[in-house]
Length: 200
Image (cartoon, rainbow, N blue to C red; front, side, top):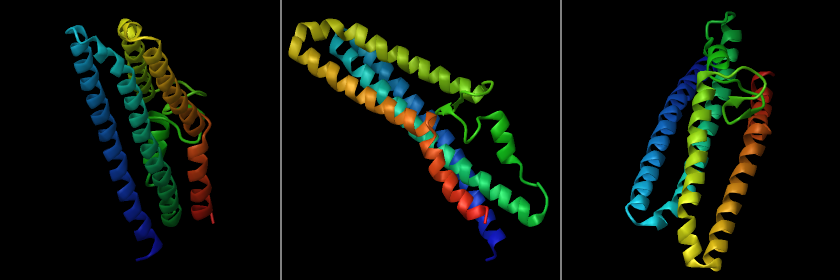
């Protein structure tokens, strides 16, 4: 196989990955929503300890959907470089999906909160990320507020253990997310390899 055929094959693979991880994102959102609603239902049905599980479920959902987004970014970065390589090889900009995604979905290689760009106007894709994140934060806070009486009844030891474990996991998740996404650490790793490979 010549390099152009290999690149076209890999591009098809990456386009399949973008479709898969878009689908996986909404699957994970659905699962997290269902589990959260069930826990709220149990909580309001006199099993108030269920409220205390809600912040952990919201945090898991946030981390999992950010993981989905990280694979989406991976696939888009690779597809972007493959399309530019193929265009150069054939001498025309026939493949423009990477340009459309950059303008319509969310940009690569910029400061962003997962898929929400900081340096430009938002897109609907970015708004949906903000929308789901906001619901997750509200759910997280509601679980703590509604479960507070259960913790108070359980005693200071349980309250401290719950608060510390939730705070540590939340801080680690936020810290890693800020470093990987907003700080650009993840995309810099990809960009270095892709530039070394395709810009030679």
